[in-house]
Image 1 (tube, rainbow, N blue to C red):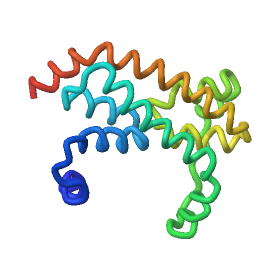
Image 2: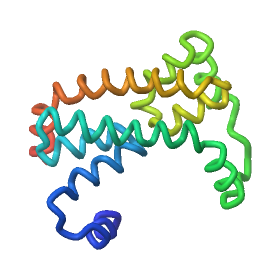
Image 3: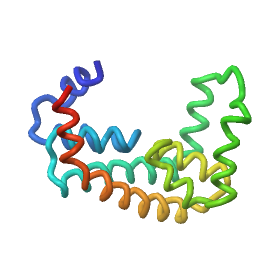
Length: 157
């Protein structure tokens, strides 16, 4: 469904795969990297599109997060508050490693969620952007080094 909407909006532009990976990475980094690998991007293309897409999401949420949160809170009504057990591990990571620990987990919990967590602990925007930029660059290098293996696994299915 999403692919159909994207094809309708973008058409047959030669760089539509780059835009697709860029946008996916801004929301869920690991999905963007896997999408780039599946598309057959080379090392530089994976690094640039996934990393820059993720950083777009990080910068946008860091500086416009409060406005986005306010807008979403008017649209979506949460029935129950988040359980303490769910927040407990986030607090543990924060107390032990700070913003760098949350940035390290950005691949698992997504860059926007990492920004939201860091902002909730009143971390300065520069520190959020720096830590996520470094960690996402390291994760980009790590995942692209295994792009051949990921492509082989994908081809099996």
